[in-house]
Length: 166
Image (cartoon, one colour):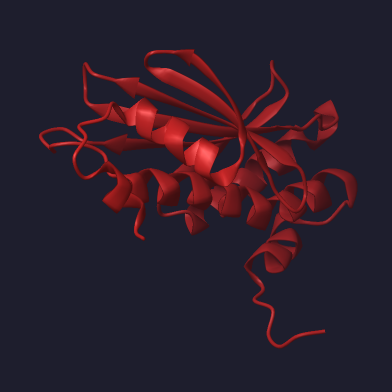
């Protein structure tokens, strides 16, 4: 059964849809308010904090996917250079580093202006794309910060495709 089929007769708030998806995937979540939800999504490298908020003002579902990162001060320039390289590879969403909070952040806004509603497949794809991007580029960030690799070398790890099975 497609995700949308269980919502066909209902006109749900976008955050209600996110809550149903979190329950479906068995993710830990906290409904912060009517227009916001926070979840913990387990990845291969770490657990990611994913927060979605609905803005009725501009009809946008905003998502941030974060994970802690505490680079030494002298590694910030190479981290920022790597962020530029990473964002060149991201067509939907972008990474930024919030130094004060010591968080790496993947952000995306799904603009729904004029659309009847957000569908579950869109929300599921949004969350999965964020986690997959974080998983893909996490090793590159670690290599430039702790492995003394250049951004170009670190990006080779992130963009390399694995073929076959081990």
